[in-house]
Amino acid sequence: MKFSVPALALAFATVAVAQFDEPSAPFYLVLESDDASVNSKTLTACHEGAAIEGLCLSDALDSYPTGQAPSTFRFNSSSNIDPPAEGLGRPGYLTYLLIGNDFEVSSGLQFFADPSTNVGHPQFYPGPDGAQTLAFDTKNYLTVQTYVDDTVTPPKPGDFKAIERWFACTTYSQSYTNDSLNWVYGKAEPQNPSCKAVRVKRIFTGKRAA
Ligand SMILES: *[C@@H]1O[C@H](CO)[C@@H](O)[C@H](O)[C@H]1NC(C)=O
Ligand SMILES: *[C@@H]1O[C@H](CO)[C@@H](O)[C@H](O)[C@H]1NC(C)=O
Image (cartoon, rainbow, N blue to C red; front, side, top):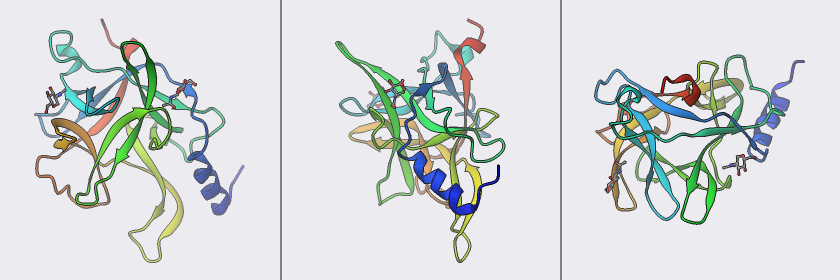
């Protein structure tokens, strides 16, 4: 069935309020980069405030368990929502289970935007509220899906595509200085000089030799 552009745009807008309540199997997140200092590093949820975690760099999967261990994450999606285009994958939320002394809470990844920088800082907050809609493409790379191209005048809606503007950067957030995963807004270079371009790939925990 073919949808017209307004129907597609409407479907995409609905995604923001859709329930992403079907968790995937658990997986690790692994960085791929031309920069050897971050290539094959993994990501671990790291404390950046009360019940708030950033995504810090941890050691490569093959250094585990002696190196700094990665966290496991899940992707909450919905079988009611189809991928917007071939190869792009279903939208949903990246989630992390925060385990406290006497509680467990599934937390969704949000993008914290500080207007003084083009480097957005993803953090997990308890629950789905405010979570950023993301997707894994069919090759398991983490993306942001968009259907508006604002680099042309007038902006052109209708072509769904997946973009990847992930960077590993040394960031300062709520008194924590960490090497973390970040998102750069727009096509510009990150203003933070420590940032190194990365791709973020999921590797399901069951697929890795123990
Ligand atoms: C993910 O899905 C599970 C199962 O429906 C739900 O309990 C959890 O709250 C969801 N997490 C987020 C962050 O939406
Ligand atoms: C994050 O930064 C804090 C202090 O700035 C440090 O104690 C902690 O070890 C860092 N976490 C990681 C995972 O690098």
